[in-house]
Length: 167
Image (cartoon, rainbow, N blue to C red; front, side, top):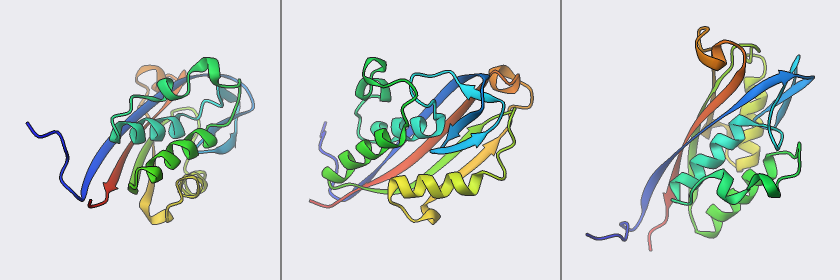
């Protein structure tokens, strides 16, 4: 079986993350602070969206998950997730790959995200150094089901398409 991919190919990566909510003053999604009566229970800023994107990018390369590259013991409490995403993007560029697009879903019952989606989308595009047209952010509820639906957690999923050059 040939293990070398064909020249000029694409790969898909998928990532997901979930964090519990607690009382607080803001949550961070896509690097955007959203004032509310909650905060995430997490080692870092708890940005489930950026964590899902990081996992998706690492998955496209077969490089494990966020915990392998950024173990809890090496993350400063409350630290922003943007620099972690930028570090993973640098890895992509070093390998000569190009991020084609990102499609994301945030599942949140307790906070209406409609007014924040544009800011989140733009910030994610900026972090990824992509045109905003190549980033999509959707917000959903869980219709009262499970930890997200009961207002106990927020989750996010992301899928990425990465293009690898010929040669």
